[in-house]
Image 1 (cartoon, helix red, strand yellow):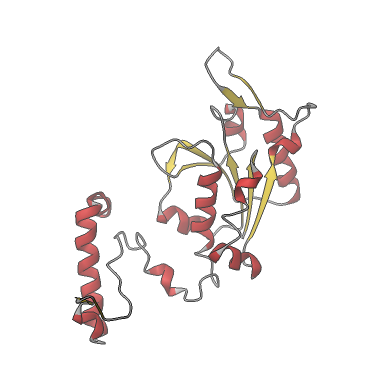
Image 2 (cartoon, rainbow, N blue to C red):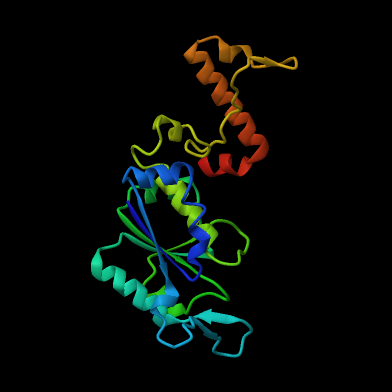
Length: 227
């Protein structure tokens, strides 16, 4: 998989992709993440990428030309399955979205800033708009990092135990059950006996019951969505 990220703050991605699972995926050649500075496509001497809003509203808007030129340059080199704009008014990102995007080959993630991007970019280039939550961030960079991480960890060969991703929260519409590791007892606090029994059938039943209980308590909306 190839992910191209368009941003005016490329330095924000130095940390998120230099560690853990995403780093290993890149080193294995299972994923490629390429950061593009939109300012490199600005045509004025100050490399400005924003301008005032038509109509007199407050704030600045990212200009059409640098973004369009960057996207056109990338599209001239390869085909893209999705060109995604990270925006608070997009569809809410969830595990189902991550699963679907992990099956794609090439994706562009566009990070907005200020009051947003010129609407003509959304009309003529963007194929999908995604939000990571009902709140506003200073820009789309953190959202893009979230998408990239959640997608890449699902690629075959990325996780050492590929079945691990299948038991993550939300994969079956439920929150994951509680998990434990050694020691079996600490300060008098014991791991539930069923988990030490070795009875796979009973353990699976216990895990499902706890996941259902936890989802009903913490995220009841998930149960309503799956009914």
